[in-house]
Image (cartoon, rainbow, N blue to C red):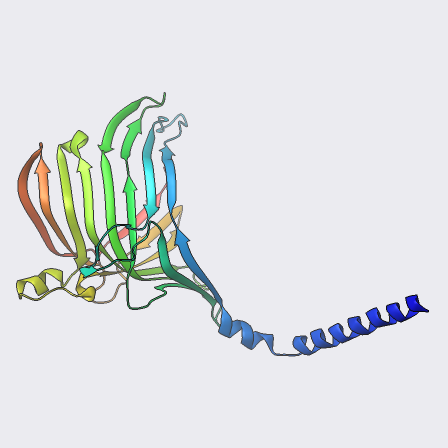
Length: 280
């Protein structure tokens, strides 16, 4: 009798749960999905021993040599006291306080938007590499193209949109570089320190004795990518007015170990650039 009562209680609970599930299934879940999407909050630091590209030997034009990038680090600017011209005190060793919002909209397009969790403040990043060098087919190290590389800056926004009808991927970002150091001593006897990469209004503000703000210190970049024949097309020509324009300030330029002065590049506009990338 006890076993029968126990079985009946399990059956009753199961029927109750099924009734609840049926009620949820009857709800218009399409509306829920369309409104929700997926949020992913980023918190990362990455170290990579090396990345290698090998020109494989195929009996034609490949010789089996390689290009190496070694000692790669991607993270945050811990210990830095300013970001895009403003004081900061909360930089960590990770890229954090950045959120990706993923949606598939009504026409089937995929939209991925990246924004700071505090939408007012940019997100800091630091990317460094030890060396960029070549090796021959036997793996012997050859020319050193870059002795050392470091980039510190901030991102205000990222967005990627995949058009489901054309398979064109549009990519846009608002990004600024506070401090770029590049050592090309082995190859060219050249080194650049403390370079700034900003938007096209950066030098104009300085020329008018005004302090560049966050909009001046970030460049708006937009390009599209799509398959083209046997390769890929990268197209910067679809940007709006003011996009794909940079001001570059290189206050310390050394050649042969001696300071030669500063170099400033005003309104570098690459909005007319198209790249077609294919194998051979």
